[in-house]
View 1: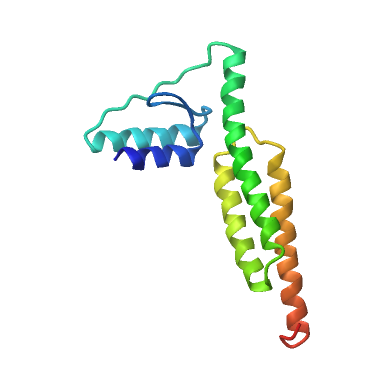
View 2: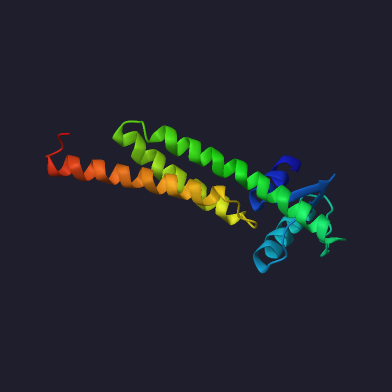
Length: 147
């Protein structure tokens, strides 16, 4: 149970503040998701409490945002590296990697509350990979499947 709940919280992009204490920006989507997870914990025989809180200071709020931004930065860098590696692969592999990385960007975007600069770099790299894959496919089609 515990692992499943933590995975769901990680997919939401929570900042872990302490043992069992997490933070998310307060919007309708995150509130609904947290309420569902709290309900699921209760259904499994556990206990949870959802608290709406504000950071005690601007510095604390900035620190939480920086932690969340840092986690997304690492994810975007991984996507960027994978896109750069895939750009050197064969056309079919590039196309598959492009689809997979576009899906990964969507997943990251759902938990990206404080976008880092790396987001745009990762998006550009995946777009370039998709364009290269499309160009290669178009060239093959124009040449009757021969490159």
